[in-house]
Image (cartoon, rainbow over all chains, first blue to last red; front, side):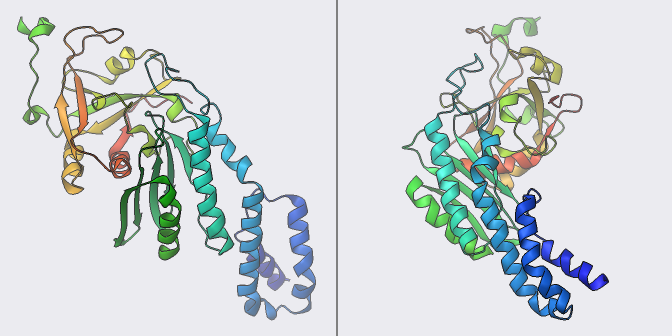
Length: 188
Length: 153
């Protein structure tokens, strides 16, 4: 019984907290029969299970991406210039869309390759730009998408404990996606 | 007294900014209301409005966090929190990371529009075309909410 418990724990590890009950049931049902037959198989199946877990996790994230990021724009996107009556710049929905599109392209591509990069914080700056900010045990990365579409995207990233992998760039929006993907793939 | 006449306030040199001093800055809730964790300072606070000369702060030599809060349009912790940057740590960070930043005392001697006179006013100025992301990340690492002035979300 203990081995079965261990097997289930191993299987569920890494699944998103907010996975739906239906998704969870489907996932467990598919594997339950095999687990019950032979507990000894659990260890050798770890890699396959891990891949499967990742697949499900990333599918779940993709399916719920818009919903997950929605909270970051709530109450901010659409604010007009001088929203604070102190002359602050507003948050244009076009800049928000550019920010989210860039993020989506990066993450979906990485998730397709089973590279585990989480959704960052998406935050407004006083100059009307948006920041994408990752802080994980492995790396820190800040990407600033400017309010003026003619301005460059600013990038600063560090792989924890590997100063040689530091990235510090200003480049046009169109180049940000391939460069960031390359860097994130390299450090994983 | 000379000090009582704002028009005679001196612009003080960088040497007068001691390591133990602080720079205070009010932060509107729009910038922190969607943070994952309010205690963990995110980098999005450290940029200026496009037309601004630099990041406006108040120098602790002439201001308290209360003064900074009271100067804001909505002087309540439900709308604004007060952030502090220690001058010693700031100078060290600028040097260590070769950031293109300078601290410049910039007293406001004459009221202008909604801006009141303010002897503490100090700018954190960028001195060439910067990598904004690196500056924001470095500043976020050394900033804290002032004790008792963390926003009440």
